[in-house]
Amino acid sequence: MEEKKVLLVDNNPVILRLLSRILENMGHSVTSAVDGLSALETLKFYRPDILITDLIMPNIDGEQLCRIVRNKKEYNGSLIIIIISAIASEEDYDFRKAGADACIAKGPAKDMERHLKSIFSSIGQKTSNEVLGVETVNKRQITTELLSRKKHFEITLESMGDGFLELTPEKKITYCNSKAMEFLNCSEQQLLSSNFTDLFPEQYGELIQRNFDKLQNNPLILGDQYPIKMNERLLRFKIIPVNSANENRLIVLIRDITRQKEDEEKIQHYMNHLEEMVTKRTAEKDLINNALKLKIKERERINEELEIVTRQWFTTFDTIPDFISVLDKEMRFVRVNKTLADFLGKKPEELLGQHCYKAIYNRDSPFPNCPHLQAIAENRPVTTEIHESHLGFPLLVTCSPCFHEDGTLLGSINVGRDISQQKKVEKEREEIINRLQEALSKVKLLSGILPICASCKKIRDDKGYWNQVESYIKEHSNADFSHGICPDCARELYPELFKDDEK
Image (tube, rainbow, N blue to C red; front, side):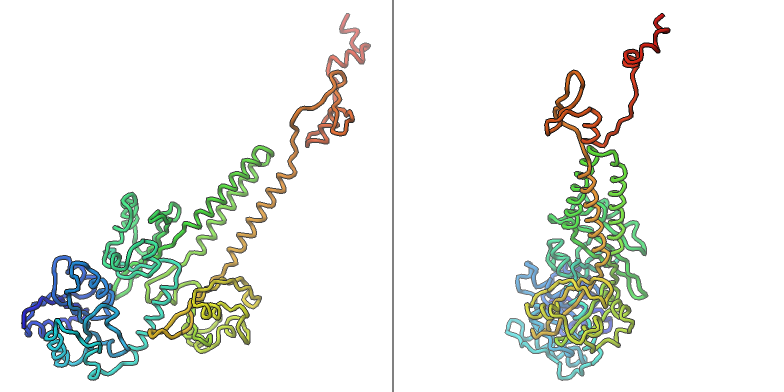
């Protein structure tokens, strides 16, 4: 058999040594990597004929590695990809979707060696679509449950409105959801294994590096006050360190605040316009300006309170402050996060199997406009506001349908958020605008040409009547008069009082 160059990827050192020995005994040269991230680094200087990888690995997993490598133009379809994984026996796994040519279930060494020899001997020929070695490996219930939970986590991350990235301490990207790819205008192949700081335009380089140097154990926010513009979007990045005994990670949440900043700019423009009008027409401008400044500060404070703090991706479901649940087709809880369970005063496991409309809203049947039923009927995400006195606050609910691997309906992912503060802010804004408009309507001004008598100084009003100057001005403005006598008029009216002065 012709000698082949093999890149072997597995995070288990025992399996790595075992498979290396088998392949070397078969007459092939072997280079190894401990995970998908290190494998991609190796591929920068090493070009194998065959890639053999595990599926479940830290950093970048085997399925992501297969997709990335399969799309590399330099291999042009010549690379043979083989998956060797224990989970191949736990679920009906279609390795062709990942871009692999063959798949072997991890089992006894002699069986794996036999299957490898069979695959190597048939290179260039059409391979089987079946996973080899499944018949000699027993399924494990705990692995099946972990795989199911992993799918739920992935569906949750894909349902988020924010972009989600996972980084190594060296800032290498090891996970990204579809929103992150959309916001950054990059494919999964371009993002995974790339350096996070290299994504930003050159003008932000110094800012990003300076903030990363200050990053310790507290979350770091980039682009809050001054948004970062990328791909015609205004983005805000929240970087959260997640440290554990086993490994350290960085979680990055990306939020598109383009619409928010546009709305804020429109509001600010309108407020400035009102301030200019009030400044010209009333002496109370200082009071109104202070009120507007306090309003802006209050808005900033409320926005800060609504920030979502998310931790490492495998704990995201339980740490998101929104109400998140997974429902089956009959609207029974399959999964409930800790926030919702705490609100209902129960443990998450106590809610499993209960109907959501009974547990949350104390109803015997769903709402007529239930977002779960609408999302399933229309096969799309549905967002609606729920005002229910039983809750005590308005709730913004987003329901997204989710499916099994075979395309059958699983149920829906539900995300609920308390929007009472937002409603309060909108109401206060309307009240301020109404007060300003009411104040403007009460301001009176004198303008134009006034018809005044050249002799007695009376003014003719709109109806043709002649009025004293003080009467006319009092009626058409907020001014008032006090009366006295000037020296010239006093001498004319009371000459006897000034005779001695003249002598």
